[in-house]
Image 1: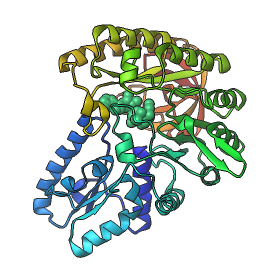
Image 2 (image 1 turned 90 degrees about the vertical axis):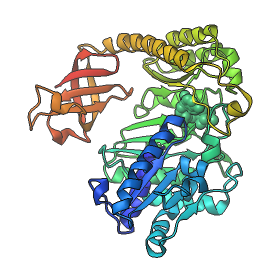
Image 3 (image 1 turned 45 degrees about the vertical axis):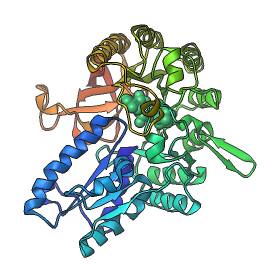
Image 4 (image 1 turned 45 degrees about the horizontal axis):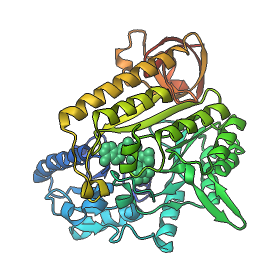
Length: 448
Ligand code: SAM
Ligand code: SF4
């Protein structure tokens, strides 16, 4: 979600005459796009701002803006920071070019956030966001041939630990025709993979005439677009609504990738209730079984929070059990970080000590690593189709690499990461690769 906002703001500013610099030292404007989901992310922003404060001593004209969730959460408190000129929330990003111009011309601090974030966004705000999104929703410049398209903004779920509804506001689904038009435009520019985004993307619904569109309808319509080869969607909330329809379109359409990111968060029913997640661990595992029955070979990924308020050793063990039964391809695992304003922070105590959270995260990560390792091994000696992203992060360390045969990285339809040596001209294209070695998170291959 944040990557998409960064791409939108970058292209809007390029349109307004700004250009990207290689380093902060050369920049007239520094914008930090922020996330508030965990405290650690916010602390990193504050430390960047501390650094920028020093730079601004010798460059007082430099304009510093904080955009995104932290801007919405802290508002004028953030504007008081010596380094900060602009604070702009997620709903206000269409104003970013104007805010920058005002900051330059008038040398004034500017605040643009939503006052009553829990209220539904107005039609005018929605239209402005829609225009901005349609005009600038373009490909990820760093990964050729791939693009993210937002299906919905905000979230109505209010999981007890989560800041998202308080910084992104209530759920708003984009009109299906706007989404489909955008994907068509992307396809005409050479985009091959589109990922539809939403905090609970599987609950997408939009009433149009007598028909209510759901995510399955969007995927179906997008599958008909020539040039689009792969469609993915993240993140799904464990829910019965539309689940069968979505699995059916995944089973039927060769373009809809067999990949489902569906966080459980915990395996303890007591903790799930405290988290305000509306399912039990048993029901969740049955849902995964349904997905596997409908789409054999589907790869499933999860998220977990360890050390949530009141989590006992037994609750944690139930999470380890669930993770093992779920057989995730990979899991994103976080230590519980209380967020100001959420119900968990207001009503529950952060009972689990930091060292216990640390132990639990290490144990859960180790259990996941074992499963990921086993699942990866199934790919040994198999041929896979990879959408190549570009140079791998460690290409400089690859001894087999040479300037015309560097180490590249890409993903397969089920989201596994593959690295192999090949010409840079493959970036943005599909390649056939034979897997010769595996590790828990990466498959290593040879170009066929
Ligand atoms: N909407 C998605 C969902 O419901 O699964 C995920 C949204 S959230 C931005 C991404 C992940 O961050 C969550 O799945 C959760 O595991 C984690 N997360 C959210 N709030 C957290 C908190 N207060 N402390 C630790 N992890 C948190
Ligand atoms: Fe946060 Fe829950 Fe909404 Fe996901 S579904 S964004 S975890 S409130």
